Length: 291
Length: 312
Image (cartoon, rainbow over all chains, first blue to last red):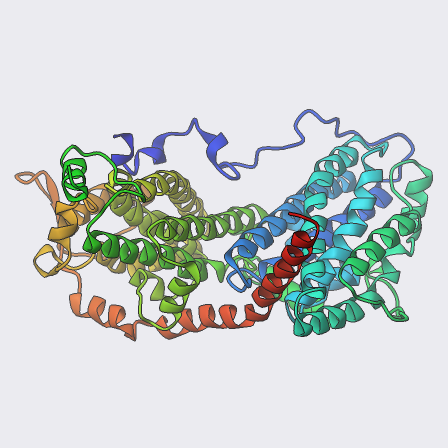
């Protein structure tokens, strides 16, 4: 049988479709116009794509840290899957940021070449997870917020952003559903899991306020029809969270938002410094390397 | 015909034995042991490469590696399912793994010291696994054979990805080429050991061959692997660390040196470089996740009782 020549596949280069990612980077957005919409400031569009791209890159990194540590094999698969989806979103958004910037930086230059203060992700994305309940609480909040955002961003006047968002909606719907199911199971499972899930929700909620504080770039680009005003996402987010927490029998106590700046403005916790030290270590150690 | 006669006839005619068919107890136990060890190998095998996901030096390589490690979890899942068709239980098999009562491939007890190791694992370790596993696609037990067909397809993509990474690195800086050669030096002999001890010292082989669970001897498969790898190494521009390696025109095979079988023995019996760490990580994940699994079971039970109340 054909399989008996195990190395035959090495010289057979016509079945790229059967690879998870192919041997090269095949552009899932091939054919989408990449020109900038009229009247949009390049620096603003670059910053906006970095905000959304960094959210995904940093959240994906936290999911990657869970590989081989999931409570069950099915969750091992699911967490890797979600991490891959977000990594894919990050790659498209960073690539778009590089195009908008026009300075020749690609996805890798942006992911590996910037220092913590240049990252624009919300602080929710960088938070380390004390246990599986914390991860699920954070993922529920992240996916619910981002899904509401991408739903609207699919109508962006930047056709590239619109296409990236439309592709992401399907993925984020699954992420939200996966996290919601676990929040409910843990909240309404055993006494111990209820206690841990409630503690996780309490820990994550102070990071929620920041998600809905508009940055000036977001406001300018919303006026230009490119971006979404995050404040507009709040009612949908609250409705979903209320429903899931009720099903999980968890009562959210009074919430006090974390103070001191926003990730959108480049202000982060030391968690991001740790993430970037790991993410960038090898790429920076071999300057000019080809991978 | 009796069940025993039907079984013998099925094997003789090269047909597949299915889970509900009668089978000798030894056949069932041998298969459970082999499939479980294979599943454990996939799960433990996530660790050496998994170490590099967060540090992968480009986003494309990160995506490829994450997808590969995810595939390994998937392979573990369908192999455990194949073992369950024989009456085994996944939770019980996991306990056997973390208590050291069942083994996994000893290759995963070696460390991954550089990113080139990710490429070499794809090229040599997955390559050796493919040589071992391709014949299992014709194994006499149906669920195992079918799982192996899918696994072999995915493994061959992984192997190609690994080789392509090495090709790219060999085209990079001198430091990168040194990383590749160093990784090849460290992984070549352990890869040869993946085929198991020499045939003369392989106690279970003969019976497995008679039952057509296994199709080729360890030494046959090892020779096939060497013959395939040498031209690949030349194309890559690396040296395989074996001074005795040379083409034998008479045999039409490569001659090669003898692996250090005492090292294999030490690694198998638990004294490889990372045996304890690999098992400790798996045990930690299992115990850290216990409260989550208990919660899921409790929740499912509540739903079931509620469902019964409404007439389900």
